[in-house]
Length: 231
Image 1 (cartoon, rainbow, N blue to C red):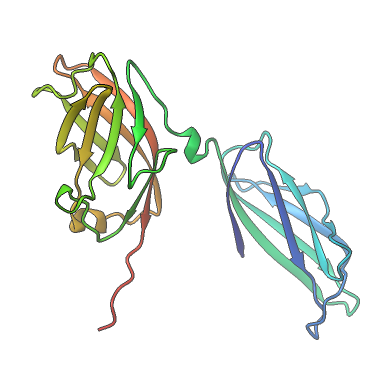
Image 2 (cartoon, rainbow, N blue to C red):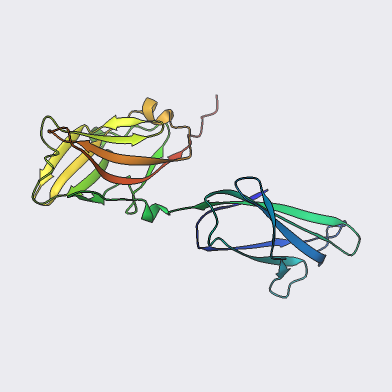
């Protein structure tokens, strides 16, 4: 099975594959076909693949994800070459509602700028088993823009949390500048080592001094698995 990645609903997904004979030689298939399995397990016919780039054995097509529900899809492509050998391939892909650039959802009086290890689109990438501390200039920083400082994130009674399905971290420091707040989070090697999901959604949320709750930003947390050392 080949995995082509995640596509936002509405994007076009091109795919290609080579057909070959039972002797391993490239060969064009007769009447190739494609079937699409949706996240609910329902199969439907997809447009038949077509020959690509005038190359022998190279066939493919384009899947239009417009109107598709979010989730995991499988595309099964098959054809029979001249030696009567049936050749097939299964391709998997995800349809998602938003890309990482879309997922920073800003609420209330604040907007958010991002600093490393958080990408401009709100994608937080952490290496499992690493420490992220201010001591080594590696905290997880968010710059919340609020020039009027109306949110009061630096109030002693206010709390800012980084929430995901596998972690909840409380900000270790909240500083101020002329444009707003610098919110910093620190994580230990043990905490990042517990991140077993490759991707999960996160939310940056503040509980203000008056107990009001404000969602500041949302995005995707990516965990890069550690490579174990040889014994």
